[in-house]
Image 1 (tube, rainbow, N blue to C red):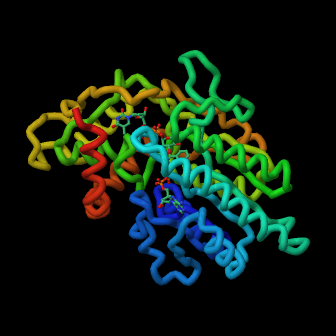
Image 2 (image 1 turned 180 degrees about the vertical axis):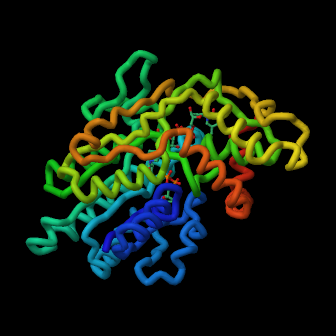
Length: 356
Ligand code: NAD
Ligand code: DAU
């Protein structure tokens, strides 16, 4: 079996569902269930004997040690993290605790477990750490896309905490021989993404007739990766990645934020016209509002994903146009899920972040 951490979050829950659907090997999911963790994402697995949920913190060495002893995983896929840049600006503490200190404790506990494994189990063991393109910093318009050899230049508390965890992963391989793999991916989008991130926030606000907040001039560029393509890349790296290597994972879909928001508005005009929802504007585009910029806002990210294609044969299946259509349709079809996750503390976050 494999141990997934953070499997109740956006990418983790897509990964667990896809893994059990395609690979079928049992999974234990260790998740702290922060505001971003939602067991409802995995409700379809309620009576699936291949799936077990454990509520806990990656930094709880006692819990993780006994979990490893009992379940004897052949691999760990580490998704657990605080993941939202804006929250890291309002309050970096949790980012330091989970992304740096938590990853350190997890590495120590896994190292102790791995050291005790015998010959073939020890050789086959893998620890895959999921990281981000944000560790490479910000690009200017004409710069080449990020390659695995780029220097780390994190600019936010979030990306600095992820960069620190990547360094720890690298050091545990170099110093102790722990069999690690690291993936650095671009902006994911798709089902089950918490509506604090741009794409689900825009869909959610538009359907409610609320303003669509664009930071600064809206010309910042991100590379968009459909979450299921990302999950397939993680599977492939786990299966065949070279130990100690990092692999950049991207969608070859660089887009300015304003274009992304226009695309979503136009798609909603077609699939759920404002009039059918009792809204007065003729088009969702008229809800767009430019608001104050994110402090230290990175201008452009772009991923060069040729290494993973050349070495492991992975490339994304979805274009932005196909992926965003699936995503918009998913949110339209899952309004009760959206209602559940946007109650309570979500409202407080929106009030804090978008206060004029
Ligand atoms: P998310 O915020 O949706 O989910 C994170 C999950 O981790 C939640 O279920 C949460 O409860 C859990 N968690 C948080 N702290 C924990 C702890 N101490 N112990 C155990 N579980 C804990 O995040 P996501 O968007 O699914 O991202 C998953 C991973 O991928 C993160 O490491 C993130 O940095 C990385 N990443 C995300 C993106 C993206 O676009 N979403 C892009 C690049 C990299
Ligand atoms: O690049 C990978 C990263 O992508 C991941 O490591 C992070 O975990 C993930 O959250 C994401 O970070 P971003 O900051 O790029 O994603 P976010 O959805 O928050 O913002 C995308 C862009 O949209 C960014 O330029 C900021 C802008 N934005 C965001 C929000 C929430 C707005 O203009 N308005 C908004 O309300």
